[in-house]
Image 1 (cartoon, rainbow, N blue to C red):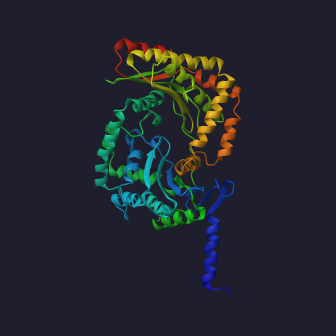
Image 2: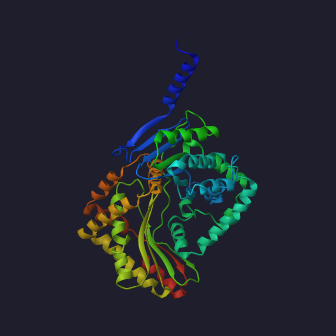
Image 3: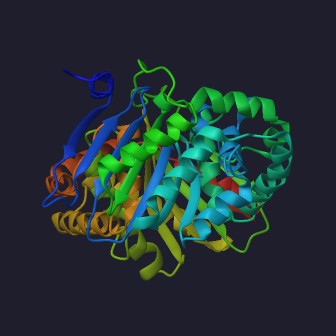
Length: 459
C-alpha cells in the first residue's frame, strides 16, 4: 500500500517532468563542452556549458530587451534599468549586493546593447550558489525606489559625458544615427541628457514589469558546474521571489526585427576641438541570421581585422596616416552594418578616406586573393577559439545564442562553418556589401572647405 506522502511525491515528480524539459543541445567529449537546456514552468530557460578543467564559473541572466525596444521618449530606459537593478532589493541593499560578491573575490557587472541586456557574476566554482542567489535576487526583486532613480540619474549623465569626451567611441553612435536616423537602432543605448532627465521611477518600473518576466529571460552558466544543481538553485531563487509566473507560458521566440531603414550616401559631421579626426565609412551589412555571415566574417577579417589586413597595411604600415584603423560588422535581427574606422590628423582625413574607399571599391570589383582569404580563414578560426578560453566568454556565447538564435552551435561546428567558406562566397558577399554607396560620419576640427569635401568620399 502506497502512503499519502509517497503519492504526493510521485505526483509532484510527474508534474515536474511534464513542465520542466531538459535537452542536451551539444554533446561534449568526456563531459567537457556539453551544453544543456532546461525550460522551467513559466517559460524560463536555463542553458549551461560544462568545463570541469577550470575552478571558476560565470553565471548570467540575459533579458530580451535593448535600446531598440524603446520609444523616443523612453530612450535610455533599458540602460537606466540596468543600473537600478544593482541598487537594492527587499533582501539586499546596494552595498549588500556588491560586498557579497567582493567577499569571495568575484566579479559582477552588466551591459546593455541594442537588442538585449545581460547581468552576470564570475566566481570560484564553490561560490556559484551565492552568485546565483544574488543575481536572481537582483533580476526578480529590484525595488526601483524614487531616491535610487534620482541618485543614479547623476551617474548615468556622467557616463554620457564620458562617452561624449571620447570621440573614438562617440563616432560609432554617430554612425548608427547616420545609417538609421530616428529609428530605434539609430538612437544611443545610453539615451541623451534630455531623455534621461525626463525618465521617472514610475515609467522605469512599468518598463521593468513589461520586459523582465521569465518568458523574456535566459539564464546562462558556464564553468565547473553541474547542470541539475544550477537548475535547482535557479528555480528555488525564482520561486522564492514568486517570479515564475504563469506555468503555461512559453519562452518568446528570437527577435525577427522590424526592418530598420538604412541610409546610403549620407554624411554627418560633428565639429569638435579634438587632436584627431575620427571617421567611420560604411554601409548596410548582414543580419545576424544571414547564411552569408561566415563569409562576411572572413571578408571583414581580411579587410581590417588584423595587422596583415588590407586597410592596416595601406593606411598605417605603408603611409603612417593613422595609428588605429580597422573594420567591423554589427548584425541585428533584420539588418546589419559594415564599417571602417580610422583616427588621423585632420589634415590627413581626405587621404585616409580616399585610400579606404579605393580599397573597398577594389575588393568589391575584383575580390580578395585566394591567399588573403586563406589567411583570413585561419585567423578567424584561431581568434574564435582563443576568444572562448574563459568561462565568461562561454557564458556569453551560450546565453546570446539561446536568446538570439534559439539554438546552440558547438565550437567544432563553428570552426567547420568558417573553414567551409569558399573564395567565391567571399567575393560574392564583397560585391553585395561593398558595392553599395557608403555613408560617412566624422568627428573632428575640420574647417569649412575640408567639411565640404567630405561628400566626395561617398559620391
